[in-house]
Image (cartoon, rainbow, N blue to C red; front, side, top):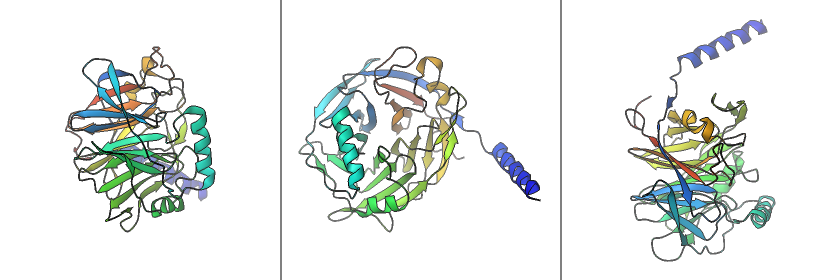
Length: 329
């Protein structure tokens, strides 16, 4: 009886998978090496107006404006001075490990994402400290005053429990009054806070999604295997939240209030062509910008060379899918 039940479940699973809409592949338009990032390790991208900005998780006092006029892009450093980091509620065990890692590799703040509001303020998420730095167009940088409920609720939901698996992406609303954060892996998740009078706080609850489990790497990956579900960055476009799902080599559109998946697109076929492969047994895409014409995806290669010998950070430009990013499933 148990064997028959298991077989029936397996048949239903196969049937459901067969009926599911195949993930549409994105088309690569161009690729650009990035020169001039002192620490390499491009870990975040943002589009402010028409200007692309980048951050490195190795540089605490620099953000980069990207000159995109040539095939090889030039990163122009802008100095920032971050004040002392406020206590976010992370336990000492995680904070001390992050501090030690920063001493060894550089980048105590470990900036893993950047986003912009319509006023030109840039928001940088520090993975090591679970904090967000606001860099205005003029004037000093400042850390957002975030309610400790954010970290408390995230950890209660199984996120932010592992070293080097904390906040990996950030997206801010054009009005600068809502902020989405992505917890990286084991468990991965999406959280939302809103600007109040004196602090950024949860509106009912912070956690939109907390998700465990593994998924198979795409078939184009050499020797694909099951790996942890993860998020590597976030982007907000036309009122929708887009997640960079690094190990799946996908960009997914989600409802910004519920985090439910609406549609996904794969960039595996282009990113995993033989000349673009890296030796690492996992995905390296860490930065995402979505606009009306396509998506920019940045690669944090940890200064390792890909198969064709290129060691600089890379940014890939993918065309928007047929029917646009708002196409219905």
